[in-house]
Image (cartoon, rainbow, N blue to C red; front, side):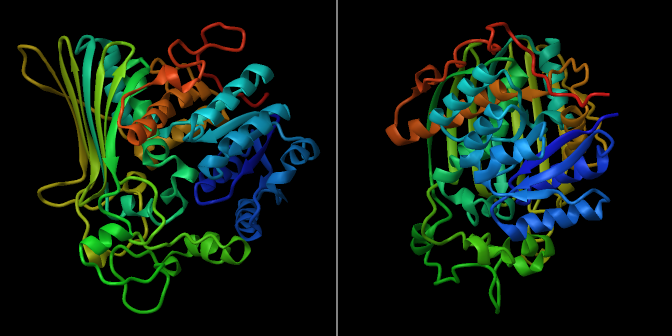
Length: 460
């Protein structure tokens, strides 16, 4: 079997999933030949990781040399894991250089860059695959199956509440995500996952968005208002720490990728969550109208004492309810590491809020029934492994339609982009007014025919 030649753009923490997949799980059909990363320490960490897996040492290139890298290293597919605001440039340049792209969510952060991607796909005819791993989580797939089967009839409304706790949620306020110019805010960076789930669950697309919210817990102004004492600017320091601080020395991997790499670019991964300079919101609420006629009521809280989410889908014949507890409580002496994100490796529970999940369906005039959720080993209940198989082997025959492409990416970020405009203006925003051709119609290929997401399969 021939090996497809890959390059990974951006070698932060998230790149590990793809580097390991290429050099270990799918080494029979993929080979990592290059890394595109301006920080030599971070790049070197992944060169070492590839070699430890028994793979050849990949070449290291800077972002300015992307096209030369693709040509010289004979790259066939690029995986983009760089900062969110760089996605569009890396995607468009890769497409124009003649290769397909796999990209971490979100696709990009604003309407202008979304239009550039849309135009590049149409001009080049190349593929862009989005890695929406939440679709593959068994509980989310089970809810999709319930809705798709018609058990609750036509969907009329969705209530969706997501709680990020003060371990995971706080982390977005320490790193580059805290600046909306880099991340699009949580409505784009984090919530695009959730909006994609809704789009996919109900097989529709967003039409109008009204948003409200603000920075009400983190940040210097809130700290002063609550009378918090002066704090160190960053979490990596000697002396006593509080639960909101992240000391990079406590985690060898974060220390290698960020603390040891600061000398090259000055990026600090461990800023205090109560400092100046935060331009994103920590409390958000949206009302989203869909083309199908359904309405979504959505909320995100980034400083909850527990982590998980609740979804209720109302239909003409009943209601489905999915309740998920990923971490039931936080106590100060448990430390911050590992598992900032409990959805990847499990979290703590309590007697009153145990970690778990439950999907109930109740049709009109009937008792509720519980729908079984079949998990497997690995991140997101085994969903990450299913996603990587679709990415590196090729999409399987999937009646749930879990593989996603750039058009799914645009429809997911459309809610967040419109939501950011609504936050700025105080008015509802129609997605059709974002100026993105795809919105308001079915996904189409460059030739104008309706498409189903696909990925490139390594030749046999």
